[in-house]
Length: 356
Image (cartoon, helix red, strand yellow):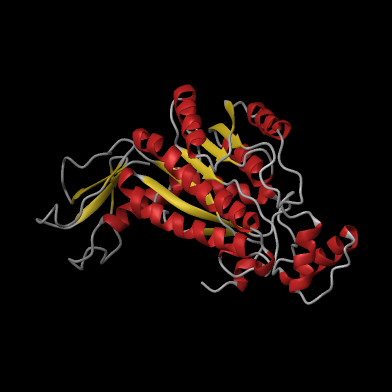
């Protein structure tokens, strides 16, 4: 629906095409204003403009929004997804593609840290994400890169911009997690998580941001965590990295706003992925709840999930990656153009346990 705002009785009042053209009393000092929709005058509610300090803008925009359908259409957009090989990355790549975006998927697709006790993503995993994207009728480009390497990400950015035509969306999602009490840590226990999760996210912004500036704007979404909003027993490195991602996001939002780039953070709860389906994670959850892990992964899994379900307001111990992906699509869309510098949670209610 198109709207033009003009002075009552103005013969030039007309539809503004596909745009919403809005004025205020300062533009029309001779009298109050009315909204014109599809060349038909719409009388504003009584008293809408009785206060000279009140502008017609709010009324006109309300009329515009009343008939607007939210589509979250990403047709013609190019989205870069890091950590795309599996988990939240694959789910988000699929959802972004379903909304119309072409996808460049980045993943190390191989070993990343000796501190991890779960299998790394593989090239086959990354290829499977590509198969899903292409099955949705969208273009796919796979880039095997370690996001700790800024140069490698810059090379990927140049390739993506050249072959896909630009970059509109960045979902900086890649990350790792391991558990160890802080006094027992070796250097790798600290540095690998900080370097991958925090420095890697900063590298993604630095590498892909210039292409978004050339594009005239865009959307950046960084994956943080509920553990970036509270302390985590035996998880100091991970919590520090994810707290850092929130600070990085807020600072980047300030720096990049002038270029029309919004920056926000996704706050997932406990997501059902390889990152969380292992003995160390079960043992940590049991320990925090005051229990004693047995070392039997099957038994500890059952105990941990039972306790996590009791803690969750929605009774959900682990969230599926596909339940997080729609939030990524929203933040990547034009509908979220006024959202920047914020955190957006998908936690099955666990956010209620956090202080704002």
